[in-house]
Image 1: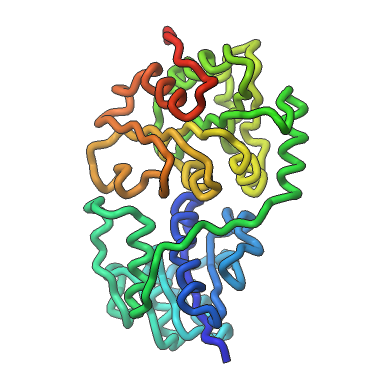
Image 2: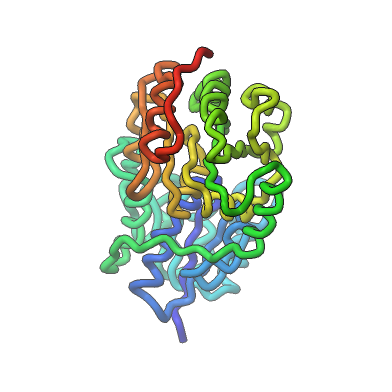
Length: 332
């Protein structure tokens, strides 16, 4: 009977994407194992039928105190006949659930009731000395497996590509046109480059009609669209209009993504799309050495404060990726 392995990562888009290489590494070194990936409900639709794992399951939405959720989870995991669980985002309820379920091999970070685990990795991620992907791969290495860094694996998103091409065509961008994606938002105010500067970048880039400009964001950003979209400019506004699978399809075909430190950065990097990413921090725990785009071909602009990054610096970074976009002096 094939060994059954559960990999648990149930938080936001970016953090979940950065765990996929570790999940794929399990498949490489244990090709006969049945690998289950448990993710947060918000990102589940993106990862359904994901290559490299056998099942992708959304975390159940149980109410009640954490210990009660742990016992619900333990019964579920026991019914799956799990032999090894890897808990990538440590929570007391996950560690307790794995112990109560009697899972023989319980892997995770040495924090939050980690005495219930059989394999513990010292939690030094806040030091910022390693990329998050490498830390996640170390969890797999705890099992004594000869882990190497795998390639990203993604489906084609063929249906979503056609949907995205239709949305772009309605706003003047043909499927054969090159385009750049701008994501001006972030979930944390401290990571937000000033919106007027994004507006300046968009204004400058829109002067070159040989490349399309697409602005993206979640539904919660619809009320702020006018803060970054100058009126009358040929810019495609897809803010709040894309599913996660459509976002992946859009990024697969984009020439470049420009963004703050955010989930779409990691999705773009996983799609093989270059990124220009803005960081404003001097804290290694939140810096690009740990949270920057994974892989080659990306540009990170990092200053102690985001206000120290100016529009022309971002335009120059864009120019190095896309020669048809020319840096222009912009007043903001």
